[in-house]
Length: 81
Image (cartoon, one colour):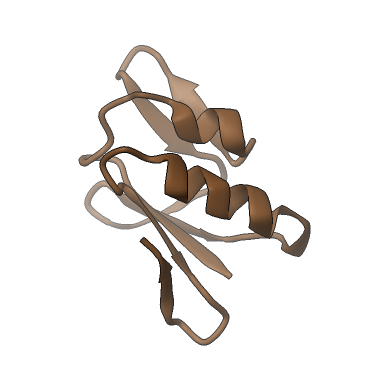
């Protein structure tokens, strides 16, 4: 599974940080950070989700009020949102 995080869309509610430790708060910027994320486009970060964290990562994506987090399955199909 793969997760993408659009930092520009993020409004800093930090609900994702409560659901998965793959996200951290950047209080200075008022936005979340995708831990170990690689910037694949301007303000778009991505990383593979460890198998033991898939459920938490999905909860993090679903908790985002502005859909800044997208999850893809192993075949590259978007499953959240």
